[in-house]
Amino acid sequence: MQKDFAQLNYYEMLDIKPDATALEIRGAYNSALQMYQSDSLVSYSFFSQKERKEILAHLEKSYSTLINEKEREIYDNELIRLGVIQATEKKAAVKGPVSIFDINRQKDTFGMMKANNAELKAKISRNQRIREIISQQEIRGADLKEIRSELGVAIETIHQQTKIRLDYLNWIEDDKIEKLPAAVFIKGFIKSYLKCLCIEPADEITTRYMNYPGRKN
Amino acid sequence: MAHIWPIGGGKGGSGKSFLASSLGRLLAKAGKKTLLIDLDLGAANLHTMVDVPYPEKCFSDFITKKINLLEDTVLTTPFPNLSLISGAHDSLDIANLPYEKKIKTLKAISKLQYEYIVLDLGAGTAFNTLDFFLASRNGIFITTPEPTSIENVYRLMRSIYLRRIRHYFSVTDFKALEKKVKQHLGDDSFNKPEHIVAVIKKEYPEKYALIKKDFNSFSFKLILNQLRKQDNVDLGLQICKIIKKHLGISVDFAGNIAYDEHVHDAICQRVCFLDRYPHTRAANDLRELNKKIGDSFGEQLMLNYL
Image (cartoon, rainbow over all chains, first blue to last red):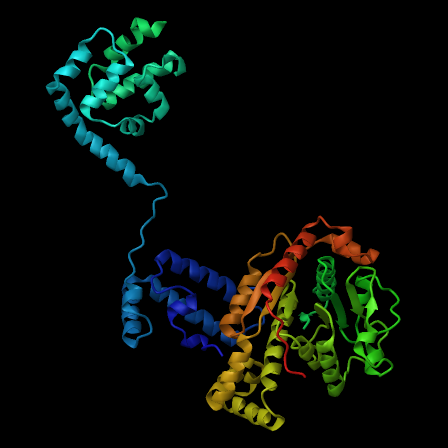
């Protein structure tokens, strides 16, 4: 009913697809050995000694052929010529490691921001209003918001970059001091907010923000 | 028509009767009208497993015509919905059931009015066992993870395979086939049904098509019993893989049953294991198996004995 084992092609012998990677081939060979080896419980008494020897020889041949890239290519071409497998089956995309996290997205925004830093600095130096705000003795949330909107940076971008919660950012900008966490955290938030927008000197402005009288009450 | 589940395994002690009684018990508990038939002719002991120590009637009453109808040999068990045809006080020569009596039995079984009929078969590969196993296409093989047991289950599978092929040939045709197989492949190849099929393919293509279709309609199951912690849990799957690849029969691996000392205790106490030790691993495995098997056997497929 089934094809004789010897008539199977190497891929069928090892139960793998024609586009299997070297790792898959090795795994398949190992599990086949587990099944066919003479001390295996699975195939105990199923084959005569001669049959088992033949099968093991076939398995070894298929493994050594497929694991060797050059020999595998020759063998594949032969199979394609005979019409056993399709060339398209073979041409499957090279399997590389698949990333679990979406690293690309992170990288993009990061790279984009770096490129943007110079642009932001240029904008800041050109913008009269921003320079005015920076030179104020008192800096509030509303001022920060104004700087941000002058620079045209979305609040979500800041949230993504600084990892500060979006609601905290909103409360900072709206001066809802009663909702915000302790001052020590706010200090850090403001600093990273400013760094994110390339406002300098960040430390000094942060101090001014922390010290303005409205905040202290 | 009833769902018939024959349970076979090559070697004694692999848990055929235990599985039969447990499955019967679970089916009955689920409200299905279930009948257990002890067809381990000459070595019957299913009645002990379902707590009927002194059966008044038995299967051989039907064979010796003391009771005319098979349904009249049915005994009630202490469990609701569960009935039994016992083989307890069978005549001592019952194991050598003549052919026409066997056919009569198979016909009578197929007419029984139950939702589920579980056949507990004997060890070994006697024709009686094979034919009872082939009474339904939903046969269940059971084996333990030991070489002796696995060897015998392979033998049983091959014997069943050959027996089924044999049904397609008349005596003379089969002799001729035998000769051809020996010609093609040498003397020792006749024990391997896969070789015979290869010859049939060449010599009788129309019969080959029939046989192939026939075997595709079977849905055999394999259960691995008494799996200890150190055993390979994938053994069953690998066995099914090797059978599919080399014999061409597809057998579904239904699951493992954990080895459990409590089974021995329950049998010695002559109580139902599932009632006595319902929270053991083996009991869980059994419940899961029952569910899985019940789901996967769709319609009942009966062979043509009618």
